[in-house]
Length: 125
Image (cartoon, rainbow, N blue to C red; front, top):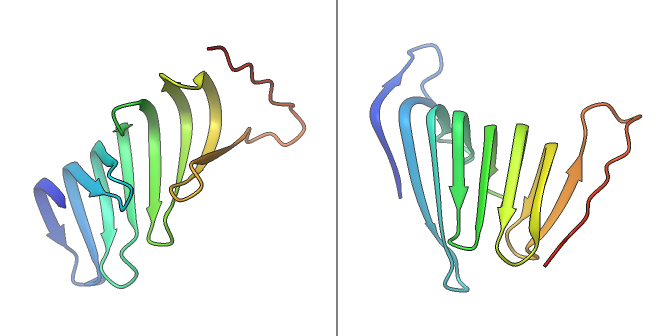
């Protein structure tokens, strides 16, 4: 379910819906419910991809993610980037430039924009 306070479509790009105050609720087959909110974003009506921008907050009740951007792709993956903070009740927390999350496998792939920097992660229970 995708909601927004305000939407508009530019005649130059009729397949893109521009949105303000976005809120999405995703019900997954395994029973998890994911909620994502942001200040603004885009919805692509052709391939169903959603791009969140500004004050992004995502949660499934166990993990909370905060960032500047989140791209939710119809292929069942999310790329979260720019000032990412991930707090998991089960796995600990981390800060990164970019996190790719696969909904099916529930795995995170963490990276920095500067590929020369190493990423150090410590998971604490």
